[in-house]
Amino acid sequence: MPNSSSISEFLLLPLADTRQLQLLHFWLLLGIYLAALLGNGLISTAVACDRRLHTPMYFFLLNLALLDLGCISTTLPKAVANALWDTRAISYAGCAAQLFFFLFFMSAEYYLLTIMSYDRYVAICKPLHYGTLMDSRACATMAAAAWGAGLLNSLLHTASTFSLPLCQGNVVNQFFCEIPQILKLSCSESNLREVVFTIFSISLGFGCFFFMVVSYVQIFMAVLMMPSEQGRHKAFSTCLPHLAVVSLFLITAVFAYLKPPSLSSPSMNLTVAVLYSVVRPALNPIIYSMRNREIIHALSKVLQHALFQLP
Image 1: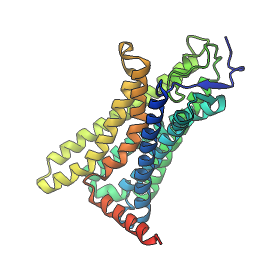
Image 2: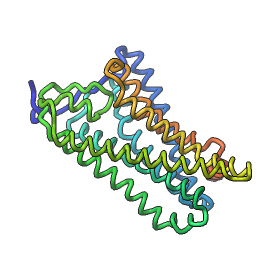
Image 3: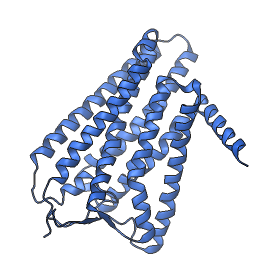
Image 4: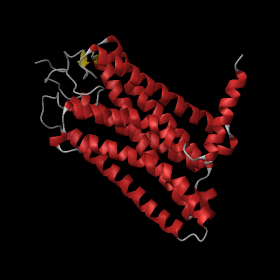
């Protein structure tokens, strides 16, 4: 059996068995990727260019769009190229880089969603202190903390995973490199460092989840106590997109990594992975744009400006 020093490339799971289905998946994934680039790119441009959107909520939304762009760009271009050229290979360094960046963007996005729940909590439960607690410096610090924590988490897990000797072949049962599939190729049945890092990451994840739950319990209590129906509707409308994005993130990620072994199969794993790594980043811009008049107005201005620039 080969060890890690002799492995120069990995073989990823093909998206389909026949050439016709591979080409169908190529066009489908290419369309999703272009839609994700367009949606997240438009939101980023709208928030950056429209001064009315220079608020903490939209600043964090800009960061979310950038993380979604990074997440989908880490996995999908390689999958699209493999489907087009009928290949499965990815280099050892490419696999390590893909795992690192995917985990980085996913972790940072989860921490950012936690911060966004705090932003909504302060805006609704402590509106008089919002300008003080969520000033530009505080927002930049919190966003940097989310990116930095994601970077540290990804660095630790990637270094731990690829420091293991690999002697179970080089076939990765997923369409991109991820930690559980790489660990299946390890010679050792257990790795103390990876176990410690995993326990730490899960504990931090549950801490963030608990923080979001507590924040939204207080938000809902505050909203229900508002005397004005219009005020309640406005408060809920700013929270529902975030709740939808968080729910989509948690449901797909938890099912992907914590589903019972009886439901585990290559096709099921592939389907779930496509949902949380491909479909979710493409849907987030749509979720945040629906019924958000400020975003829609800013997007219309961006599109009008782009059309006027055409010859």
